[in-house]
Image 1: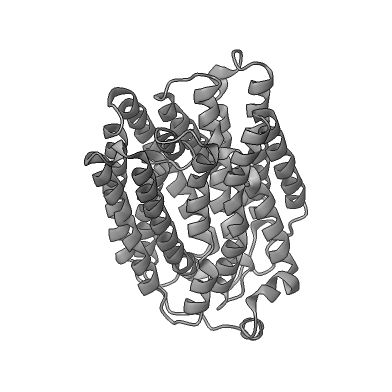
Image 2: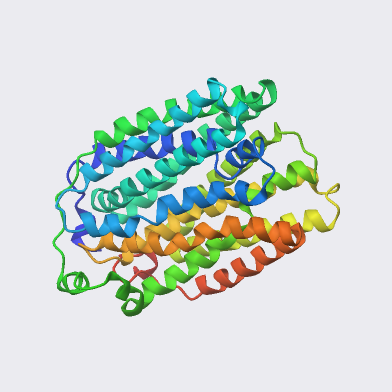
Length: 425
């Protein structure tokens, strides 16, 4: 093993704890209390019946988070310190408090105004968090080596998942016990409170010294970074996998709408969906952590791709059988989402960090995530497809596209710039 992996970076323990606190609190605050796959679509559903507008939840968040990252990477890639940009991006988290205050004040009596404010707040949060994320990933790669990074992500996903299960139960109780809009006002408030320790933890991180860019990186920094998609075959292959698997977003916002409109499940069941997604993520984190250490990141990505197929396929099975028989097992759709979401961080993003040359991580992160911006259209396209055809077509098309992405994951090679377990004698 390389000496680089034998010697831990300075302030390793402090940074490990800080990243862990951030990971857990962000996971509980955003992905449990106001889960973008279940809670937020149902929230919008209280204000409009339009499927494309409901799909706009995923579009605004995904687009706002992904699209600006290439420009951010251009700005910060050659900067010796990335932390100031990460901290600057945390300001968008105040938008949760703005949304909560608007709901407490009764703005929901004017649905159009409430929707405009909500989507503006969601967009501001997404853009600011996207700005912070470019620097966050770069600092993470320098502060936490590969082996310890996988452990950090695995532990973070397990802890946030276990805490998220309790939060999911609370979500169900709040949605079932309190009337609209107070129930959602309380959820946005809880999300804002939970994110406070995350901000404190990130402020306390000690950024490691910058890495020296090698000759390969210096050559790549000249001209357009889009040429990386042509010259770096591993990077291009990874991006094809990410985009095709990410097309599961065609159906994701409408799983909860289907549960309400077709299966006629009560609104309180949303808490069960959050719990199912969280539990799926917890179990997947443990299993995929072991898979990563034994066989490598490629197999983690493949598990995530398989789970992304299973979600729309199961929803299609429920729909074609009439729903009654399988309605009670419908939360399995959200279990698959939890598995896939765990694979995004532990597999796809970790793989990206390892194939990026030193001094070019911000560029690879920014370019990769900006290219992924094409997925911003997926939820809206899914809404149009649903209104024009049926749930059968929506779930079937989604499963077919993701299946092609899974086939591409089978061709991924081991990251060429990482010391992988599978390469050890």
